[in-house]
Length: 326
Image 1: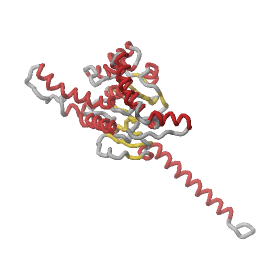
Image 2 (image 1 turned 90 degrees about the vertical axis):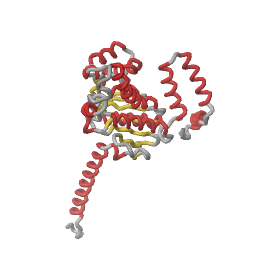
Image 3 (image 1 turned 90 degrees about the horizontal axis):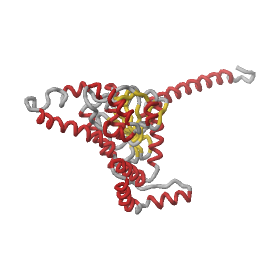
Image 4 (image 1 turned 180 degrees about the vertical axis):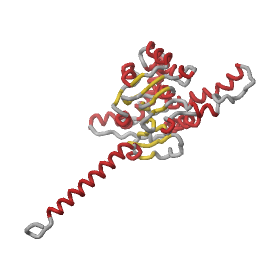
């Protein structure tokens, strides 16, 4: 007690202890929030029925899709690839979504590819597929729909009208490359381990890598190197070859960069962004003359939208434009 009969020193000591305790709790809460993406995001309405995928909304008009089998390294069997296709069909038709981020749940893997254990218990890899006594032609006809179904489900991401930013992290082998090749932008965490692994399990990659990867990177020699050898390659090699456009220190930083890019894209005209994706994808598969003709037809419709005058007015007024849902 001081000369005025007060207990100020004791009060200040208690106040400092309280502040330290509050700061400690705040730091704990911050660590939890940073470690759990879902703690800072809003579940996206209408996407709660998926068992193997978590779809949230980290920003307006942005969807974040997580492959949600972390205990299985986010590996795929038939239930997962069927849901994957369904998720991206729904996102493509959802006017409330303008850009998509894709990552894997957990820190260990984006996806380890095919869930060989599950696939070996049912379906064509189980040894109990249709036509055990049939000849090769009839066995092939029975097997073909399984491959086509798998291909079609993964291709739904490429067909999605919204731009998709794929975040590769941790183990990213086999099917991970097929999926990444369907994305519009690929971003990588520094520790990512990548491989076109199919040759090592006795088959040629059949879900899209061999068709798409040569069109993504500039070196046919490098493509054949990694596809024939099935060797691992890292984030920096992927960046050097043009397979990814950004590398970040860890998964959290890579997801953050992808979300920032998605937010930027979502703030632009959906007519312009979705049209640009469509025309780029068309141009990849067609001649320049055919692409110019298709662009003419496309823009003869798109230029009639209100997005063009809204964007031009924004340039004059320096105010952020508002675009109607598409």
